[in-house]
Image (cartoon, rainbow over all chains, first blue to last red):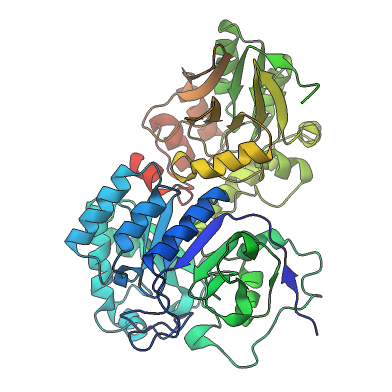
Length: 285
Length: 265
């Protein structure tokens, strides 16, 4: 059976897998099995990232996102964010553990100098510290909340990002957003911002023989609902169809040129089913 | 391009959101400013009371309108406004607004909304002007000041062959001049104050002189009368609070960091 493909529309979002799968945490649901030892996907060097950012600017990119792994493990992350913010609104996805007062000061300075918004997304998976830490590792909750406080104190309005790993209810309701908004209010955040994403059958939760999309399922489907029609992810080894699949050989679309990656992409992975079913986007909104 | 009408001075507004009192005040203000034509960039309904009341003033004033996402949804009988919120609180309020507006918009006015084009092209002096609701490529794309890169605007102007792009959809006005006398103007909305603690709304006046002059004009209207009508219609108190205070209370998730930081909530 042939694999269905998603057409490419335009480059709206560039994802930069800046630290590959190098992370100081080892969450049980990580979509790309990031961790502290032997990352299977290498970090990107500073010049490579800058080159991609410049190419994306010329191609009319709308937003740039930095992810990993943990982006704040990259030695030049602040320099890279400064470069990115000269081009487009930029977002970092972080576990918050590396955000010190000094880092928060530097981020606030970058945000203040830029015409474009700087968004910091801090991952938390439960309002209960113990439940959260069973998923994300000991001490992860307190460090994430500390980061949120440091950023909030500097007017940066961080976005708490949670997966549905412990919640069992969808973005359509049942209190998940409100629980996290209440958590943020309880730690003094006056403009609580929450992003909920589904759990993907990828990385540490990958399943052998998971469901795949078929051409029949996609008949009459509005492809613009799939983020891979307007997203590309750069990671070690080339340009990939989306941030969930960045680094996977089957999702690679070019060896390094963004423009050459503007081709239809294969919807071959069980994670594609999650996007198809939920209409989710990895973007902030 | 050939066949485009040429103007020297125009008024442009967007996001009427059923606020017929602000619409009447805007049209009156525009008439006093010696404009040759008045344009509306869409979203006639939503948020406010008595949606049918905006159509007679729009027609009588000969406003040249294009379609917004709300107009598209109402005209086509879609299930929702196409705003695409994810937060259930925002969806809750969006649904109330859409169901009320759908129920209270006549079949005749829905039919009129279906006839509206999605783009409008004119000339302002030498400038080729493209009008759209969200962005040139998408009806419901948000072009906020802090999330619209210059590189993207350059691409739009190249791809759509325009030196000036006019849009709305976000509800907050902004203007950026690019090299070579090119401009992006988000004209904001006249239906809802723009989250700055002021109760007035905004309209844009564009004049082709040596270059292009862009002026945002504050429009004051009887917002208290609108608030009372919204209460009588049973619309959410959160909407009424926005009319009375100038601060947004709902649908905040779409605001980028810089724009959100300027609001109260």
